[in-house]
Structure formats: C-alpha cells, structure tokens
Image 1 (cartoon, rainbow, N blue to C red):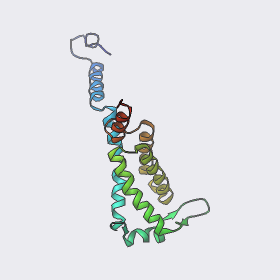
Image 2: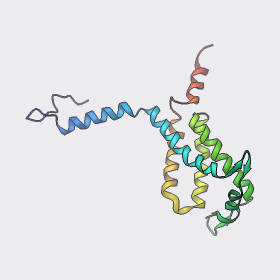
Image 3: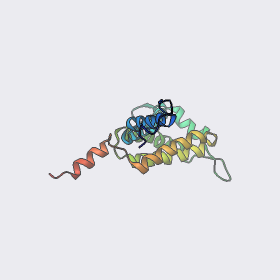
Image 4: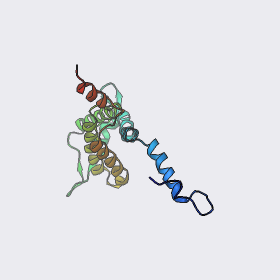
Length: 169
C-alpha cells in the first residue's frame, strides 16, 4: 500500500500515483469478485435468452421462422462445406430450449458451471454457423470460460446450496 506522506509533490499536493492508488482501492471496493461473477452471468445470459425468446410461438411450440432458419438459412461452415444442419426441427427445438433454460440457470446461479459449459458449446455452434460474428462470439466464450473457471460467486443458489450442505445438521 502506498502511504500518503511519500506520495506528495514538493508543493504538498497529492501526486498522480497517490490518485491512481486511491482509484484502484475504490475500484477494488466496488468490483467485488461476487459482483463481477454476477455481472458475467447476467451478461452471458441476455443474448441467449433474447435469441431463445424469438424461437417460440407458445409453450413448447416453435415458431415457423425458427425451423425455417435451421432448414434453409443456417449452414455449418466446416471443412468441405458449408453443410445444412441435420434434423432442423430437432436442432431448432434443442437450440430454443437451451437458449431459454441455460440463461435461467445462469441468472439464478444454479448449476452454473454446467450452464456456462452448455452456452460455450452453443457459442461454438453459432460461430460455425455465422463465422463473421467471431468478435462477439469470442466475448461470449470468454464470459463462459470465466464463469466455468471461477464459479458463480456468492450471489448464487449454488453458493447457498453448498453453504447449507456444509453446515452440520
């Protein structure tokens, strides 16, 4: 820690280094690991949730455009391809289901690492489908990997369940 006495100028004003040190302490106070992990979970959940909401026309009923996208528009860009998705209706259903269920789990912080793994897998498939979107896909992958590596944080159901399980009964 930098002391205030060493970090003054000859005229007695705070030096720039002292101001940087104070700013760093303020940022560390505000950006706690649990808050950062919560924000990562929310930021990763939003684009998938929004995409998932567009695929449904009612409870467990895909809208026509979702199936059309997987049967006519979306292509897997693999070596020797691009290729059509196999079983487009099944793929649309799985995609739409994952885009709704996995973000809910992320927001709640329940099964968080597994939900992040699922969204990382979906991100890879999206990247293979829309290769020009790699900057945003890379961001999604980084968020998913961060959640997988560091867990959900204290603001999560996973944390509450682990704490309850470890307490003697």
